[in-house]
Image (cartoon, rainbow, N blue to C red; front, side):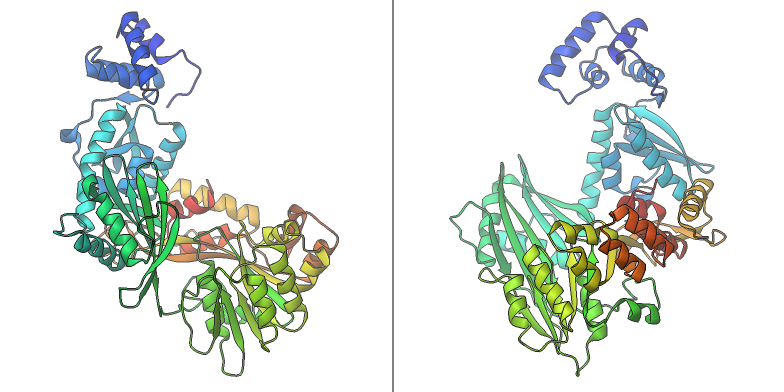
Length: 544
């Protein structure tokens, strides 16, 4: 869209003779009561003039092709080209494909950034985007009509004869669909059910409002919560074989929202290399299992830190080694380990003090949350133990900054921290439907630029793959997730930089001279290897 400075849409439309000043006055009055609506859409709602002329005029003003979009205009199946969630987020409807070009209609209120995001998405599929605009209300109407199809695909209809059966159906469907979380959310006129699958939230069902209190009552009953309390509560559901379901309730303006975390009681621990760890066994050995030291896995919430720690522990687990874990909660029970679960009467720091008297060789601390836990973990590392833990921060370099902010000294950090590993989870392309293709010019430009920045030569003669969608992956184009990693091994030069109080920027410069490569490098390699897409990587790392 042309973003050059222009007068307000209303003024421009009056100048063109499309509407009168009286029409604009009426629209402004309407806007006071509906502040989220834009003038163009309001004029359409108020039927101020012929709709086709109106949208074409708005298109001329903002530098786009204006059309009236309706169901009959759509010549393709939308979800074959874009997920419904992305379409709703960007207010976009692709409606026709021919000769390598895809016609895509946006809401007239959408911005350039969203258009560029969608343009690149279609370029990744080998399609050149031809953009149009229409009224936002028509976009919303079309997308809403498609929502029912997605709901039916997830097999949760909300028509069960009993509330017991309905709640059971919601949970069993979540388990079948590999959901990590189930959100049951009271809304103004309905109860919405959403599943988080491979990190993305999908709407699964919309249930009539009159069943809300019965659903809440049933969830409280099976998760051992107080029925009469209308406040935040935590509980567990143990009715489903092999699953320990953690339940959290939180009141909102329309009732009590529930989030169910689905945890397998004895889930299989995946090999660290299956998770996507980019190095071979020799390099892995150099990064872990160092006595008198700490290894920390860093990432935001929900990016698989605990899963990686379990994989490392499983790799190190041998009968001659005493391994103790301190977790909140114990998510997977591993034979041969001493696993301690933190409850409301204990803390990580208190449990860690006790564990040090239990003759451990390796200690896993679920998370370093504060100075006290950090100091005891440091002491454990300095007295001959190997400590593994996690921390919430954006990358491996910032682990040092985070420990400093907790109050740990530069001496303790440099002398004990051996390795910081950062990671993100990206969706893995569905093996049954991913489609091979060439990299396009824009992708080559992005990848080459990143390679030059970090001194890496990527092989762009290889093929890449695009997400298509099939029954196996519920038409998303992705199935499960894979880790993108960066590993910071603290060399003598990096330790010296920490000891001298250097900033994270200076430490990063020193690390780049060593073997350190940032997350994006492993991410690009996984795109080239056909594990994921550039679009998916950009969601996590914002590389373009």
